[in-house]
Image (cartoon, rainbow, N blue to C red; front, side):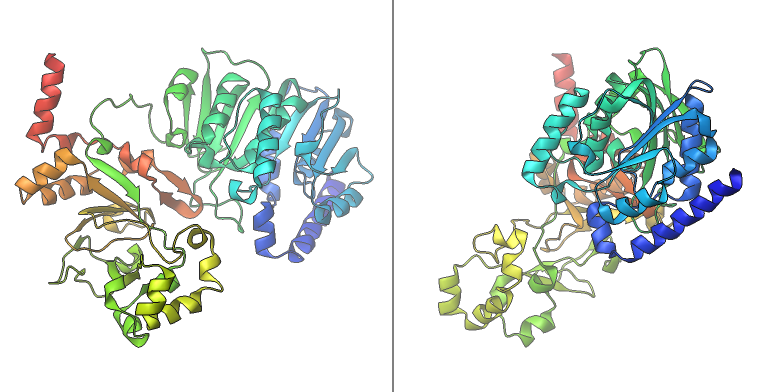
Length: 520
């Protein structure tokens, strides 16, 4: 029997490769189709099977079965007479029809259709294993989101935000298909552990089921060669949680031999917004002290709509004979910016090797046509394509830019820990120039209390910058998020939540204000 299992798995892998080759990478990315490797599928299945009562009949369900990697793992791990029923759904007939033929002589029944529209019958699955489609919310039509939100809340009792990816709805909808005390394992992107839409997933896992274990793979070791995504596996059973128990968090390595593991109580999980800090980091107390948001208004850099069209070198501006009055300096991408302190020339431009300028015109089209013929001609060049892009089409005029004045402090929006930059994926920049920046940076605009202090003390800006640079990498990464390949990102609200006691210590006015409030 073992030999036949290996033989059919070889057939499945050959089929998977042949089917994948007939689809472009873009097509598969749009539909979130990333096949589960055999070794990983078997490890997940075996671990899940061990969570069921020994020798209990298995009623298997995979809501996004593809060619059947998890079912193949099931027949390799369980005795044939233990598999009472097996069912899968596959919306894409390109994979579903050949998979149905492959498994025609087995108990597996594949439904060619959309799992999210199917209605659960009386038969309930006690083993739900799934690698759901990783489709981001902006690929879902508004009407589709509303349908999924309504169906998901009805199925599991938890409302889901419209910013959630499709995999979140698969998880929620499967609740109605599970038997009481049944086991589920979900191979999903780990971003849900940190992002806002992940709150719904956490609420479900903490209140509607018994969360057993979360394994997070090291982001540097992506599980799918064709997807830059950090993966996690979530195991739970369908029964009400008991507050006294804890959840096993593991990280790195494999399920059977993780590099790090830690047990976290449900009480602590309810307090923590960033679950990806576990198990590497310990439980932390809620920081009630000053944070960066107390001293800075933090905003993403501007999104031009088309950097190639709107950002130019001085030579390109001259070659096109465009008027200088409609250009303002803009910093290059962090990969081209070696400096962490940006000095300015006599015109306020950054004194760096790679000088770039942003085209930003607020005049109407009629004014541009009448007064600036070369600029008008350049805009005509951009009308067929650039003006129709999403951001540009929602602006009036389409070639105007967001208001992002220069800031004395910036932070890079994303990066990898490569051992450079002091071992941190983020860099804080002291900016003396009039340059704005694109959305690969975060602006830290000083709030009034800090702005006044900087105006009164010429050296304070540098001391504040030194404090920002001295923030521990772990304090930054704990608030941010990490993707496949070890790519760290930081959104404005996440950076705003980083502790800032050292900045508070630089401001006597702030210290006096806190002491006065405490005395009252």
